[in-house]
View 1 (tube, rainbow, N blue to C red):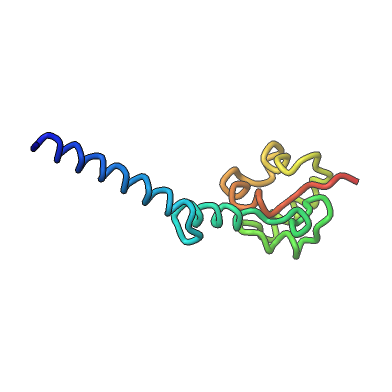
View 2 (tube, rainbow, N blue to C red):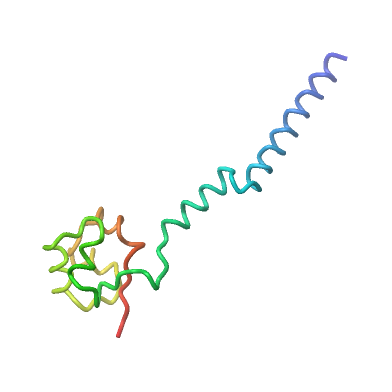
Length: 109
């Protein structure tokens, strides 16, 4: 009798844990949903990204870690085949690139 009660309790706890996890993942307020929303918020739509091949110095300076000197260096190094050229050519350090990579694009003419 004691063993069957323990088994029943364990099965009940497992079932409740599974149903709670499923409810959390299906809920728009659940942790999984919040992570998905945060990831989506980190991505800037391509149409709203700053083009490193054509942006003005003022536009470039709106990016985190880009001041007048780096904006001038970006402009002087044009054209870029890809946005990661900013790292390869040592225009910006990796830490700055990591902050702005989702906000920039390098369009080709």
